[in-house]
Image (cartoon, rainbow, N blue to C red; front, side, top):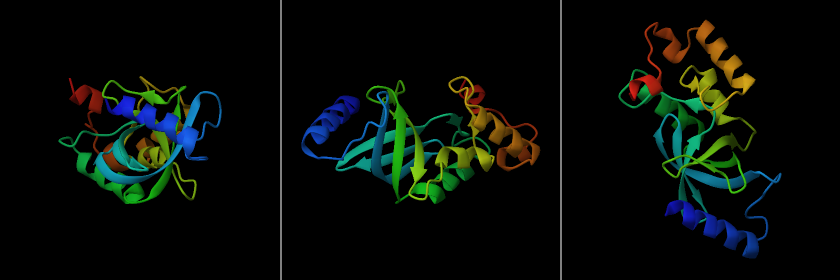
Length: 165
């Protein structure tokens, strides 16, 4: 239902509010919004005009709340973007969505910082190779792992996708 309302809102705002919704390329959706909540280390809630929307960070998977470093990942994501205006970029004609209706996107701060990459750089998220083949995320994970940052300081860290099983 939220996805339908979002798509309807995009259509209306694109028609009546110039510049509210921007399609940079044919299959990329770009939105400016405010982050009003942090659910965990890879999911935030944003407010696009008056419409709340859940955003799943693309390319990464952070520890679950009950896992080691789950709380630290949530805190880091909150420090990076809570309460801030950001730009999200989602690939797909009307954006890319997961099975829970969350828009899958990269998040950029006003200074251009890529929040998704910062999470991997800090060692608080894995590069989610099942859904991403982006070489930069793989490189950032390798660097964090070699420096034993965040979750990589634990030699027995368990990936979230294994933890969820």
